[in-house]
Each structure stands twice: as C-alpha cells, then as structure tokens.
Length: 118
Image (cartoon, rainbow, N blue to C red; front, side):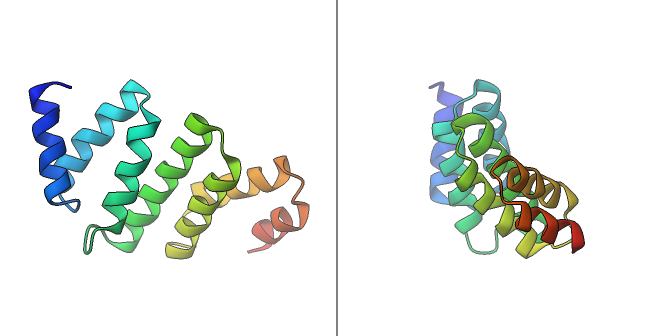
C-alpha cells in the first residue's frame, strides 16, 4: 500500500463519513478489482451517521450490490443491497431493473412480476 493510500485509509478509518477519502478509496479498490476491500468500505461509509442523503445512500447501495454480484458472485447478498436501495428511493430505476433481472434469473417470477407492476 502506498503512503498516500495509507493516509487515505487512516483518514477514512477516523471518519467513515469523509466523502473525499471514501471516493478516493472507492475508486482505487474498484479499479484494482479489490472486492474484499471495496465492499467493507461501502458498508462502513453507509453506516456512518450523516454520511449521505437517502438518494445518495440508495446509489451507494446499488454500487455495492453491483460489486457483490459481479465481484463475489453472490446474487442473494446483491439482491439484499438492491432491495435496500429501492426502499430508500423507490424510483431508483437501476436498482429496480437489477432486482427484476435477478428475480427472473433465480426463478422468482412472482417477485419479477411484482417489480414490473409497481
């Protein structure tokens, strides 16, 4: 880990609501494909009090769901993140579409129909 990355990590660990540190670390871990570091980063930032608005949190949950699905291959855990995103922002179409697709892929046709009819 470079000195700059170490400083960013220390800054984020001291204040998980720090957007600048989060954004820089998120970019680094995403580009590196370091899902094992990226997903806990999302979780810590989302858990920080006052870190983001509900709409911002929904988008972060969606990105975390994508990382879980694509990076870890865990569709169930990804669907949970997508559901949380939709609960925060029911009109957030990317999360609704991804939930619908996962429902179809896993045979949850009733869930897929419910998502279409909402």
